Length: 279
Image 1 (cartoon, rainbow, N blue to C red):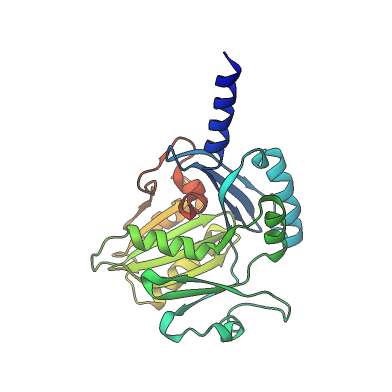
Image 2 (spheres, one colour):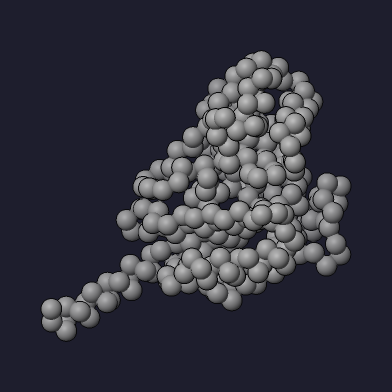
């Protein structure tokens, strides 16, 4: 191999690295990341890590630093970095009612916010919604120090955009439940419109079922008729799965499709749904 060939390969490696994209999901229950080769349209790495117990934001920050180091994520060079903040400090606002000068007022009734909290919002233009939320500022600072400029959004934004885009245009409502250890997101859609989005924390399968059944009841849905699709950290035979099977007739495990044009070999997409669909 000549020196010229060696230099050429090195240049090509640099060019390819510049087309890697990274998404990182951070919550108080765990972390996950995904690396996309945007030229080959292939997800080359996707990993997740669940904490033993729910942490506070500063403990999660330490875990993120260690996670990035052990996974050697900084060995790559990225053209784009996206952080996904997963928490229950958010409120969805119809676009027509949104005023960027009123952010605290959208959150004060359903989230505990402090005077010094930084408030942000994601616009969801395809569905005329705005998601107002509190990001993990300390974690954003670390990501900036490691990777420079990056984009961040709330996990509800990712779920709404991806599920509404992939849902059918039929008149029958569909209830999606994205399950994580000790929390789940409930998303009900009909005819590509969002009827409900909420986040719940639970300790037992009975807690899970109570919040689910209560939400469906409040919206007037018949649990024998509505389609229930569970995905994420759940499998057939799990305690939550078995309990739902006793009380809800039309339900199944939902296996999301990989976003159009991407190839992926690894854990099932639902395990890392947020980071894959954030890209």
